[in-house]
Length: 254
Image 1 (cartoon, rainbow, N blue to C red):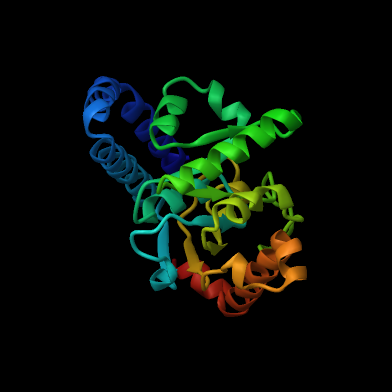
Image 2: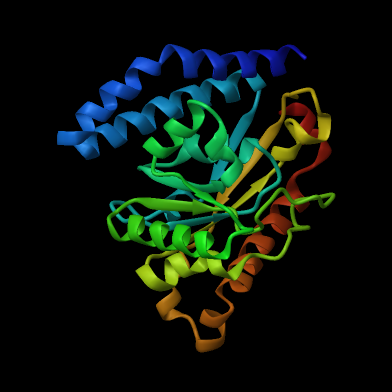
């Protein structure tokens, strides 16, 4: 339980100690929004890297060169753990907002930091609000802010990462309407950190693989129509490949 307690304590201390920074960043953002966004990102990345260190998480990152520079993209990732967000944010090269569940908007202080990073909150039970959130995510991309979506909508409950839930096709309207590239992300091993050992945080090895960019306009008509399923297949292939090479010995060694 020590790792669990340390990770939780790190989050609480960060949210409390850096309350004054929220006001400072807001003031800076009125004149220098880009600078304020970058500082916010680096601060959050700092605490998330500390959390990964305290959790004993070792990351192997593959395909980082597939992320285009100076270009907003739509990151699409499989979802098995609360640590998926921590891992992704620790690696994002530029300002990126995540589309999160509406429940996260009710968490004091954390929701404020999420909004500072252009995160959006999706209520899947409210169709009109859901459409508005996807439209806002599209506008963010058009303005140069990357977005990250977990299109399964919730944690996958499968025994292994390839057992993904179906992807919600509506999430991919961000790419369809903005014309941005889709960067598929396959995370292997994140559920082993916490969810499979609840309530303990365990020292584990996690692999993050960025696939080649998917450009919707270069796909055939049927592939564009089922863009979510097409992207899911790409992530599935990466997960299957990683799963075959991700042995129990490597997990223990991690």
